[in-house]
Length: 218
Ligand SMILES: [Mg+2]
Image 1: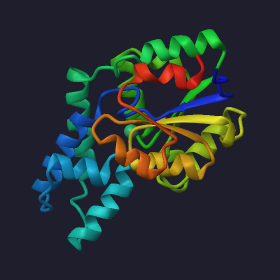
Image 2: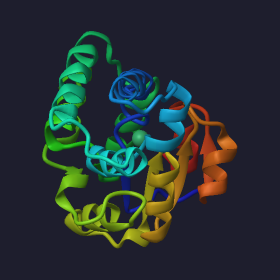
Image 3: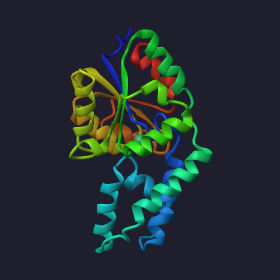
């Protein structure tokens, strides 16, 4: 019988909310229109899980010139419009949160999104009240995922050593960052094959959130 952890840290996009298939389509289209031809699959492979600011730096290095100053605003506006209309919570997430509450296990969010992006996603899917102010953004730390900073920050704010936390992540940069922080990692293989998350260092890999409770002992 697995003993429940002292803390569960959830990534948001692709773990709690099913946003990645929508946002990566928009991101690929927008990058392509700004001069860097990119498919949906290439966007998932290269940019998923990272802060938009870090993605922009990567794209500008590939282009050898700055992106249009309106790029980030246009991306965020198109995402907001689409997500308001189409975003849903990932299947099984509410049950996992209910079980954590019943077991008395604290949980929080560590997301590469900005506070506004995270708030929109939680509001649209009805998850905001489940997390309250236990929401930590990549904009709150110096280095985004795959650095360990955000996971260390979130664990510290929750009063738990990162090594005593379990992180649920769907992207290789997130898995790498969580492992670098010393956490145990459950990889949620949604858009990427399970093997990619295992290669990145995930201790367990699931293909749905319904498989998570037994791994948490809840
Ligand atoms: Mg994610």
